[in-house]
Image 1: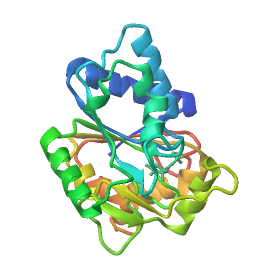
Image 2: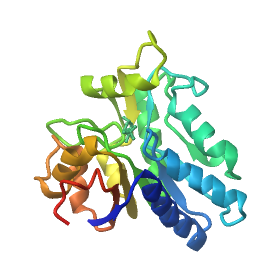
Image 3: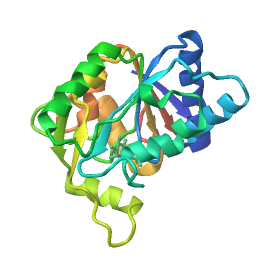
Length: 242
Ligand code: GLP
């Protein structure tokens, strides 16, 4: 694991955008694995700026997202499809037909998951962007007794529902289930980029990087990947002995 410590959130976002930009510049038809959450928003803004400046071209890029809430349509403001359109896709020249997010409204969950895995296999992810949940989850792979390899429907942990409720309107129910790429899908990406910001993630980041590899801390599996870069701001990296 390569750990890049940066000053603050903006610095983290710029450095992440540097690596993603380099990826797309070197390989214009890159397949990017993309993430939601508040952490990557600054990075997406930076990518949009670079596209507007003429420094980045997404025309041949394909993307595949980590996860989606079960039961939300793509035009629901809290759906991850809506998030991606709003935070990135609507502002750059990516072809939306080349952007993939699990279908939260699919009728046949099992078939949707198998198709998603097939797509991951076919596309092959060049660079996977990840955030980190407070309990060590990646995508929506929650702490568990085993690592789930494949795309699956997951019951969200109470702490995740609570953490994500801040993003929903008052009184609006936070979905209790989601579809997520499995650990196998994430680990087959050629390169993985993890963004971590804020003091509240310092303990879990330490466990991820230096603790035992255990499904109780899903992101700890990343210790076994041979090309992981963690970009953490000072607050998040404060418990790491770098
Ligand atoms: C959600 C997403 C994750 C994300 C995590 C952290 O649960 N499914 O992909 O990494 O939240 O979110 P934030 O970046 O807002 O802390």
